[in-house]
Amino acid sequence: MYKAFIEIPKGDTRRRHKSYENDELIDLGPIKDVIPVNDGVMPVHYGYILNTLNKLESPPEELDVLLLSDGETAVADVIEIRPIALLSREDKDHKIIATRVDDVRFWDDIPEDEKDLIEKYFGYKSKIISIEGEERAIEMIREFEITKD
Image (tube, rainbow, N blue to C red; front, side, top):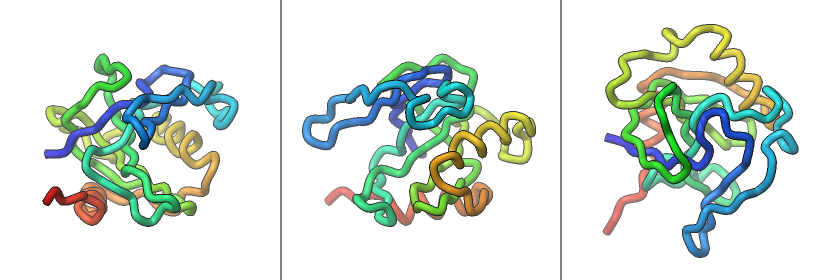
């Protein structure tokens, strides 16, 4: 089972990032200043997968997650997720696409207009190389899991 920490709920317009120094959430300003797509409105619940570190990024950061859900989610919520796809980007800031654990949808079940918005939004700053299925998403999470001693 995987858990996601939500930094930006779906529909929000503010960029937030968890500080490495003191575990506070830092408000980095309006999303549209960086991503004008969708007028800067976050199309999914955005955060990262707990106990992961994307070592391909420089500097390494947690593995990002895009949670597809219409359910209520707030900043700093921890949600149990089920990976359904891997969105690979040219800048190595890859994104795991997930649903809540009780959601039975897969990437192919997502409406085309929702997929298109996700691709435009998260491909704005860096080109999307591929979107692969559930197996590849789980493989990447396992590759970047932090083992606790």
